[in-house]
Length: 443
Image 1 (cartoon, helix red, strand yellow):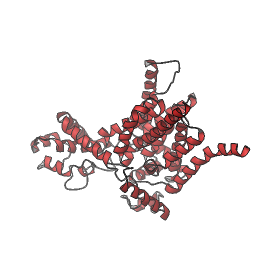
Image 2: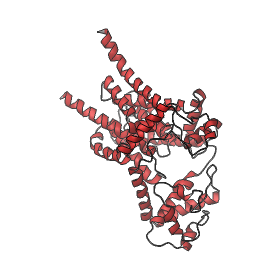
Image 3: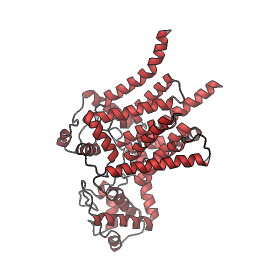
């Protein structure tokens, strides 16, 4: 009898620990791509630029002092995710069932694969899961911890405020308040948390890069010009683009259409004779150029709104149907190997990790599991059921709203951009099914 009781107590703890341990075996010390190399470099030097999330890098700076390299951040983000998953599923399942469900979601390939990389997207997703679980608790201390998690998540990704909105609106900060007063208070807390997150990043930033002008703005300029049906003369476009340091002087609209690719902004600024501009990568653009790019963006978008909309919808369509190499490849990198070696990053991996990566890549190629549009369809389908529930409804709405920001902000294809939609949808489907099965069993 005592042995059974001990087993019932131990299993809900052991199952997530075993699942998490397998995750660590598969992924440790964590994959670091080019943006992670820049982030770790800034974390080591203690000088932060505003095109990278300063609060996230400050956290990495602290973790790096304990566990040098990406390993500490990998352990931190995956642990936060597991704790959040267990907390959410315990709202609808007994401890053992919640542990099994949490482990299954952690190891579900579309959710797991981005978590194996040390990315801001992965860290944000973990914080959103744990933060939502804490916000839904009946304990005020956990509510405050959930708000803190949402603050860090917001500071980690520039568009994360869309993901935190609904989870923060469902919190009863004053249980005695009902109706509009309750939601007004929750909205005020969300605004305060969002403002604090941006203020924290701003306070930590040492160097303004003005990266919007050299990524999204240049992408939108070329995309809008390409989608204007009427011919645009070189004289007209030269006036609009004056001061942007345009490299094309003849057949500008045709040149824009030739280099335009809705999957990536890079061709507009690549070091190539066909590119429209050459912009600095590690320094901000000159003030005159960035002001001219912002002005040209505004003029083209306001004068040709339908062309701009066609461009953004083309980007969104590509983003949803193309997984953008969902499974990170453990192979060569764009940055020089000496840079990785200088930072102490891995340049090779154990054979078993490479084999497991190949297995995931085969799954990616031969199944629709890693296709973002599939999860968007599932999210919309489950929404009528989930929205009746504070917890899983908040997650579905959060995932859809966050994905919606990519219509305006995406500048390239990358599966990790849709990782929160995929994670939130997966959790919501499991939670809704579990609650409905439990309800039927109680009848």
